[in-house]
Image (cartoon, rainbow, N blue to C red; front, side, top):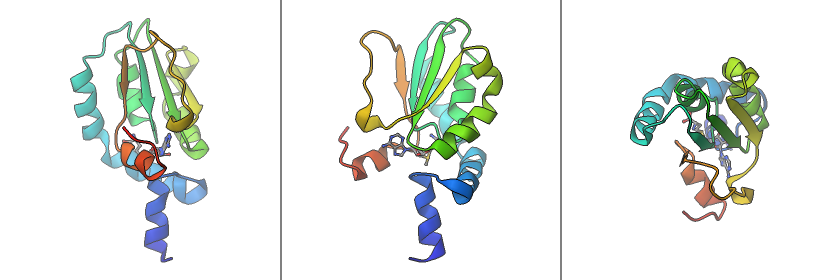
Length: 134
Ligand SMILES: C[S@@+](CC[C@H](N)C(=O)[O-])C[C@H]1O[C@@H](n2cnc3c(N)ncnc32)[C@H](O)[C@@H]1O
């Protein structure tokens, strides 16, 4: 497999050094798509929100800025992205607004009546490859 093909797979499951690089590319390029998605959700300060596949944590950061008494929880399959997104969202994590987990959508158990809003950006096409249907 050529380098470019191999590197492109980092966007599905970022790992290690090249995963970290892929995360930085995502952080530079996906802001407007995250903005658009969040604009449709009408986030309220007391909302409990779940993002699936948070990657570098740009969407988490933009969402958390609107939350005061609520919570933003993120799950992502990649521990490399958890580290990068945690650096980006450290103040929100320390204040208890954001919680980031390593988990897969396939094994996710969503508690009844907890989340007001659930969203995902640039990730669903990877779930389908792993047999998850939406
Ligand atoms: C292309 S990135 C998008 C990241 C971010 N949402 C953004 O727009 O910048 C896709 C993300 O989905 C995550 N992902 C892929 N398959 C997943 C799965 N089955 N469960 C949870 N996360 C997954 C990847 O680890 C990666 O961080």
